Every structure is written in structure tokens, then in C-alpha cells.
Image (tube, rainbow, N blue to C red):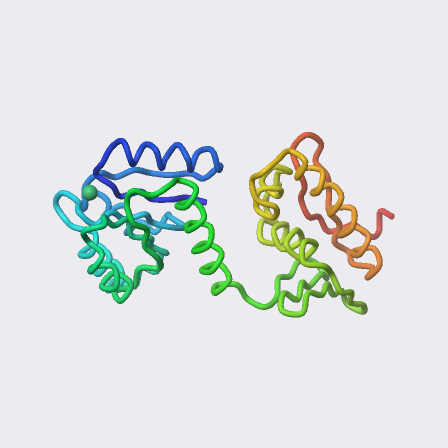
Length: 229
Ligand code: CA
């Protein structure tokens, strides 16, 4: 995940950046409205944190410009208490959420995750495919050419992550973070357990897709070479 921070208070921008870094998010900081808007136009970001009172161009103007230009990157407005009245204004002009300063970083992360989840869900299609495998997201089913099987919520989240990142290796850490949150090391074990569950189900439906473990790195989907078996 890549987050753009448009905020002219250096100490706050740094504190946010530090939190994002801990959560393994990438980020970019712009400290004035014009630079921030230019950066937002690159559409390289999954989410924008946008301050209201900014040098050169204020947050609401930026918001309006971006939405008029059909840039749909989710935006969370960072507003001061005195700007309460402007909040509705912001939401009306296409902000996805707002948070009032001063805020706890924990609260900010919760908002960021909620917005990312919501917006990703909207973009999601109902099916993800690879090889002969189809993940039916609405009905929580894995399907192959001739078979299908019900999967649990966590199994679905796991195979969904692997399918969405099918061209790259998913690290155990990133899977644990995406699926279980960021609380403890024990979550890493969950990944292994659920990998086993999902592998078993892939086998049961005789899919040609397998979850390959890359030692010390993570997991990646592969299409089995049937002739080699
Ligand atoms: Ca400001």
C-alpha cells in the first residue's frame, strides 16, 4: 500500500510516516498544496491523507480538483476542530472520511484500513481466477473444472491475497498482516495452518493450481505441470 501524506506540519507528517512505516506501508510526504496535488495526479497511491489548511492550495480545493478530474484515489481529510463545519463540505465533495486533529495514530490507522477495505471491496469483482481455479468471493467457494468446495472466511482471505498477488511472492508477514492484523507473532503460525487447509481443498477439487512455498520468503501460486506428475 502506498499512501500520500499532504500535510504542512512537519512533526505531524513525520509521526504519520513513522506509523505507516511500522505498518509496512509506503508513503510520500508533500508539505504544500500544489506539490501535493501534482503528486496526487500521478495516481500512484492507494490512499491520500489530506490536510485542510495548507500553503499554496488548501485541502478542499485539492479535493475538488482531483474529483473533477475523475481521480478516484480514496481521501481522508485531516481537519482541525475549528473546521468542523467544513467536514460535511468535504464529504460532499468526495472525501471518503475525515479525522479531527489532534488524533491518535491508532485511530488514524483504523480509519485508513477501513477506507482501504471499503474501496477495495467496491473494486473487487465477484470472481478471481488462475489456472483452472475460480474463487467465488460472494459464495465463498473454490471451483475447478469439475468440482467446487466451500471455504471458511480466513481461507477465503488467504487464497484471495494469493490470487490478487499471483505474479509475485506473498511473504508470510504480509499475509499475516493482511488477514489477521498486526498484533502478534503467533499470527505467522496461522498463515502456515491456513495454507495447509487451503492446499487440502485445492487437492480435493483436483485443481491444477498449487500453493508453492518459497523457503524463507513466502508463498506463490503455481500451475502444476500435470505431465510431470
Ligand atoms: Ca495545516
